[in-house]
Each structure stands twice: as C-alpha cells, then as structure tokens.
Length: 499
Image 1 (cartoon, rainbow, N blue to C red):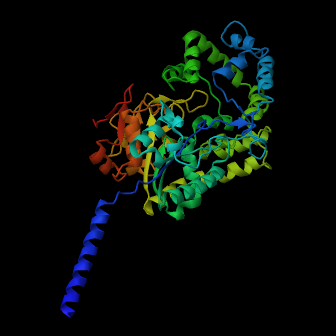
Image 2 (image 1 turned 45 degrees about the vertical axis):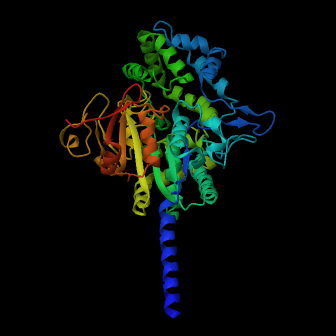
C-alpha cells in the first residue's frame, strides 16, 4: 500500500511539473506597455478648457502670419524689408509687433503656470485603443509614430502621455510618474517603455533625474530629443547673427519640411519672393539686429509678452549658454530673478547638467537605452551657430548627447575622422556621445517628420517594441541597421557604408 501511494504521489507530482512547464511555455508573453511622450505642439492648448466656450490658443501658424500682416503698420514695414531703396521704420515695425502680441493668451504667468482656465483636453489615462482618431489616420510626426507602435504591439498596449508643453519639464515629469504608475497597475506589469520625442526627450531626462532608482522602465527611447538644448535658443544670450547666405541655405532645405502642414506654406511663400528679395530682407534684418536698442526693444516689447514665461523654451537653452542668457535677459528686464520662472529654469539647468551621469546610471541598472538623432540640415540662421548640422530644429550634437559633428558642408579631419564610430560621410564621430554604443543617426530626415508605414518609422518601432538588445552589434544583426543611416524622400533607409 505504501509503495502504491508513493507511486501515485510521484505520478501526481510529475504530472503537475509537466503541466506547469507546459503552461509556462504556452502562456502568452506579456507585452511591455509603451508610453509615448510628444514634443512641442503635440497637444493643443485651450482657454476655458472643459466648458462650452473652449477655444484653442493659437501659436504661430499660417493664420497667425496672416493676422500679423494685417496688423496696422506691419504690412508696410514688411514690404520695406524687401526693398533696398526704402529704409525700415524701426519704431513702426516694433510697435506693430508689440501691439499684436501685447494681449496674447499664449504666454504663461510670471511663475510659469497656465493662466486661469487654460489647459489641454486630451489627457487620457486609458490606452490608444480607446482613441483611434488620434492615430488611425495619422500621416506625420509623433502621431504617425503612435500609429506604427499601435500596429506593432496593438493599440491596447500603447499610451499617449499628453501634457501642456509650455510648462516646466520637471513638473511634467512628476505627472508622467503618476501616469507610469497608473499604466503599470492597469496592465499588471512591473515595467513600461518610455518613448520621448523632441521636448519629450527633455521630459524623460527630468524623469530619470528624479525616478531612476525606481527601476520600472524597461526601455528609454529618445527620438530627436532636446536633452542638450537647441542652439537657436542662444538668442536669449543675445547671440544674434543674420547672414543672407545662411538664410537662403536654410530655406532651401526647409521647403520640404513638415509635409501637409502650414509650415510648408510659410516656407514656400517666403521662397516664392525670390532669392534676391529674401537676401535683401536678410540684409535689412541684419542691420536692424546690429542696433542694441532695437534688440532690447524686440525682447522687452515683443518676446517678453509673447513667450517670456514659456518655461519649456527657456529649458531649451544649451547648458553652456544658460548663465549668459540669464544675465542678459535679467539685465534688460525680460527675466525676473524673483519669479517662479527663474526658479524652475534654474532647477532644470541642473538636470541638464546631470544627464550624462543619469543616463549611464539607468543603463547600469538594467534599462535598455536608444538615442536617435537626425542630421543633414544647416542651422537656423539667426545665431552664430548657423553652420551646425541640425535636423531642421535641434542640433545633432545636442540630440545625440555629445557627438562630434563637422560644420555643415564640411567633413571631419585628422584624428576626429578616425575610429569605429565615424560615419562613412565623415560628418559625425559618435565616440564623444554619452552612449556611443546606443546612439543612431539618420541623415536627411527632418525633425520628427516620421511618416506612417515607412522604413524610418518601422525602425523606431522596432527599437521600442522589439526583442533585440539595444546596442550597435545586436541592432545590426537583428535589424540590419548600422549606426549611420540615410533616408530618401520616401523615408526608405540605407546604411551609410564606411569608405
């Protein structure tokens, strides 16, 4: 009897072990939820939000350009800019601009908070399976990326973290933390993947700074991130330089930017004036900017009431330009050092300085990291850095976390042009990046212009959703992509070969 009982128990235990193993083998593997964090303009901002009087607050699209030109006195001065025979009336020009932006509702208050009744109306805590209008017909930018992610892992596993992008990214990171906790609870998982696009990359940087010890993010994907700032924001440090050759070069590249949007209309309209007239306008603006009085009035009468308290824009100032920007803007009365704005941007300046240390820490703690930086466009021609390589907006050296990048139209030489991390076109040396083994570069793809169902968008989705390790060797083996990639007009990708 004892032997029989032993045999029965052995059989039962064996059956349980086999059944358990089979259950594990055949159980459906849980998908890691993906949270997409957009950049500037990713969520429209409204006044009287949530009421019958809800109205979108406009920024500077084609409608606002039309509004500007109908402002009394401004159209005439705009025409003077295009003439080499009639001088610009600086008082009339600045007065018209100042009058237009004086009572705008876009600016935040002096402490960097939205004005009463302002906010977004698309803060969703549920997945994109419940918001198909957000991504189903998306053709461009973060929305197209959301669509690709939904197609890859299912909309029920993809979330959009929408936020008022004008605000402090550190405050936004706190809201993102609550969002992450909510998603983990809903999906009953221990980890999520965060994808930060453009300014969303700065939000991820602030998130890491505060919550890196939580270890509940499986992957951090930075897509053209504003982690190091944008050199055009050096204008706050009064680094203003306008050169007609640089202006024409930039306009030639940006005619094809943002397909199907008002920005295309603006760039094409400017180019339609002809190179000669554009060059004359650039010369006149350069002359205008040489006057210290004009520049001060531009910032105090136009920039301050329009954008002066938009914290996120201050947080896009490159780290090494921040102190000078604070000095110059506080000296002329644009920045109040006793304000909440100053307190917030100073705190983020510290976050920006800790990025290299922070990103290495999360990687050491087991998180996978991928940084994607585009290049191939000349710098925005309003500062001394117009010869930088950018993606149409963000400088490649900043988005990549410190790559050594040749001046636009030039190639690296000497020691900088040698080594395993040098691009085949000799433009980039990724050795100086914060994570050279986890950084990829796409040439001729403009800032966040990922279009639906293209090789470019699918590549980003693979990095976010795939099973491959996120390093150069693994990505090359599994996805056939090297560190340096070139995109054609249809966003087909081709590896840039070493020469």
